[in-house]
Structures are given as structure tokens and as C-alpha cells.
Amino acid sequence: MQVNIRDAEARLSELIERAQAGEEVTICKARKPVARLIPDREPERPKRVPGSLKGKIWISPDFDEFDKELAWSFRSTRAERSIQR
Image 1 (tube, rainbow, N blue to C red):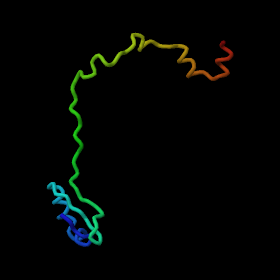
Image 2: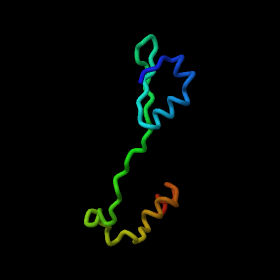
Image 3: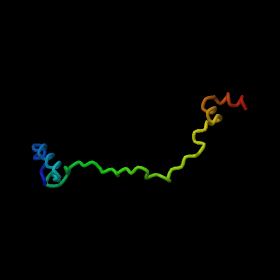
């Protein structure tokens, strides 16, 4: 369906309802298409499959171990670290 801008302004609610119903509405200016009114559809998300990453992720055995040197580097200033060494 094609309508000129003036008709589109006057019948916007009707055109939106038609677009929601699946119809594409082309808005023209001087008989040249300038815009399209189309239905808004949510993109389909891929279905989640529990366990699909099994065997693809590895966690190191020492993942939860506390690294004192790393913790010290965040807490102390550069001057404090040079004195300690």
C-alpha cells in the first residue's frame, strides 16, 4: 500500500493498525517512496539447551586459591612495596 505524506498524517492510526496486521505501508513524497511502515517483530532468540557447553569450559583446580602477592600489590603503594623487598 502506498500513501502520500498528507494522507499518512491524517490516517496514521489506521496505517499503524494495518502494519501491525502484517501489511507494509510505503509513504511517498512527490510520488517517490521515502519511508516504510512495517510490523515490528521481536527477533527470535535461540532456544537455550541446558548442558550445551559441557566439555567446552575448563576451570583450573587452583581457581579459588588466594594469591597473597597479588593481593599485596592491590593494597600497598609503590613506596611500601619497594621497602618490603
